[in-house]
Amino acid sequence: MNHPSMNAAAAAADSTVLEMERLLTMAGQIGDFFAPYPPVRAAEGVRNHLRSYWEPRMREALQAHIDGGAEGLAPHVVAGSRLLQDEAAAKKSYYGPPKA
Picture 1 (cartoon, helix red, strand yellow):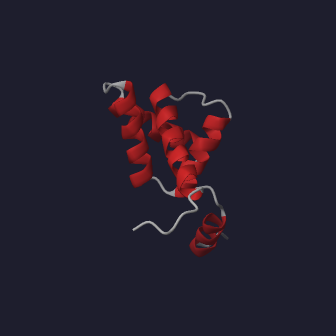
Picture 2 (cartoon, one colour; picture 1 turned 135 degrees about the vertical axis):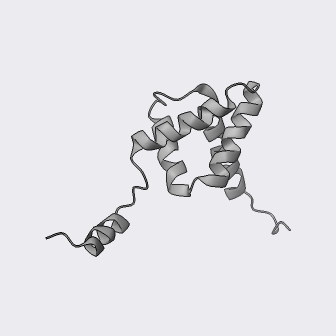
Picture 3 (cartoon, helix red, strand yellow; picture 1 turned 30 degrees about the vertical axis):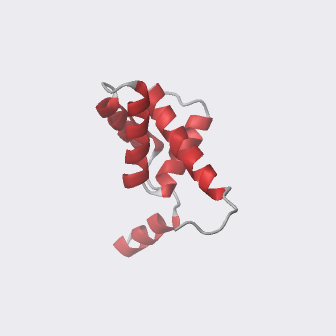
């Protein structure tokens, strides 16, 4: 017999937030919203949405898909995710005094 708390514990142990298909659907919907914007603005809009509303595991899964070929994603979604990745890398490489 499956107990609900056992299912919740198994789900919590799984590091997957959502299935990749669902993440790609969501990324596509974000991309559809920003598609009418100029390319730079569309990429910035996608980046801002991912930064504000997606948790790190979701962003990492999307980035892994992009690194694997980005199948099914619009160019501005890929660009927005890469902007976010570049932004995170820039912050990690800062070795100066603490920023206020």
